[in-house]
Length: 454
Image 1 (cartoon, rainbow, N blue to C red):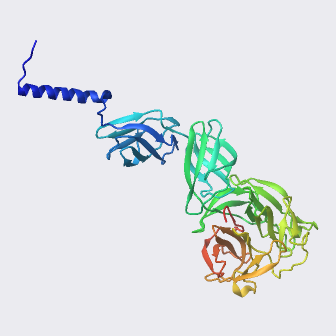
Image 2 (tube, rainbow, N blue to C red):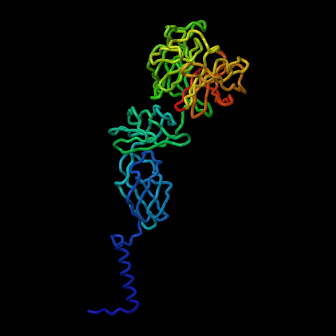
C-alpha cells in the first residue's frame, strides 16, 4: 500500500519524528541536557552543617540548585559545567542522605554518595595549641572506635565521655594566629570536621590561702573572665606542662603574722575540665622548712618545673613530689641573694627566655627594682632588662604577682597592697620598652596566670 503525502503532510511527519526522538533521548538517546552527579567530596560531613562539598558530574550549567537530605545547600558555586561546590545544611541524624542537583533542564539525585557523620558543635578551650587538653562537644560520638586529629596531628589520650563529649590531648600544631586547624572526629558514622582557630588561651585562679576558689578563662582583649571550674583551694602558681597537664602551687595560708605559716602548701595537678585536683606532694625545701613553701609563681620549661620562693626570693626548681631546690646550688637557698623584698611573676617565652619581675614594681616610687629581669636557668642569676613604665595605675598597686607569655605577648596581673579594696588588673608588658598597658580589672582574688600557647 502506498501513501501519498503532500508538502504540508511531510512537514508534519518530520515534526512528529523529531518530537518522538526528543522524547526518547532521556531514556538513553544521548541528547539529554539534564545534569548528572558522578562523585561527592568529602563523602561525609559534620551533622551540624556548614562544611563545603564538591560535586563532580556533567551539565551543571550556571543556574544549579542543590539539596542535601531535603535541605537547601547554600553558597552554590558552579565552577564549570562539570563541577560545583556548596555549603551543606545541618542534618537530623548520622547516615546516608539524598543529594540532588537541579538546573533548568532537569535534575539528578544520588542516595549512596554522601552522608552525615557525628555533630561537632564547639571545642574547649576555644583556641587550639600544641599539647593541651581539648574537649570536643557535639552529638552522636559513641559509635565504634573513635579517633581524633587536630591540625592533621593525631590526638592522644582520646576519651569518649558520653555521646556528646570527647576529650583528648592535642599533638603538634603548626601555623599561627589567625589561621585555623581542622578538628576531625572519626567513628562508625564517618568523619566530622570543625575549624578551630589556632592561638593561646589565658587561664587564671584565685589565690587566697586556706580558701576555695575558681579556675577562670580570661579574654586577653577585655579582661572579661568566665568561670571554667570550681577549685578546692587557692593557687598562687599555675602552668601547663609539655604533656598537657595543668599544675598548680597551693596558696600559702598564714597565721596572725606574715611569718607564721599554717599547714603545708601542696603541688597539685588540676583537671582542666572539672577543677578536681590530685596532690603530687608537699612544697618543702630539702631542709623541711614550711616557710619555704610560699611559691608566688611557677612555669614549665623543657621538662622541668621552675618557680620563685618567697622565703629567700630566689628562683627555684620543683620536683614533681613538691621538693624545692635552689637553682645552681642543689638544695633550697636559705638566704636571699637577689635583693628583692619578695618574689613575683615569672614566665618563659617561645625562645626559652625566662622573664621575671621583682617585688615592688607596679609603682616606680615603691622601690628601685621596677624593671624586668632575665633569669639564667642554670645558675639562677639575673640580667637587668627594661625599666617598667607605669601610667594610669594607682600607687597602691605595688606588685605584679603573675606573668604569662601568650602568642608573643607578655601578660601580667598587677595587684594592690594586701588589704587594699582595689581589684587586680590584667596588663600587657612590652618586653623591649617596659611599657605597660592596662587591659582591665579582674576578680578580687586572682593571683595566677597560665597560657596554653606562648
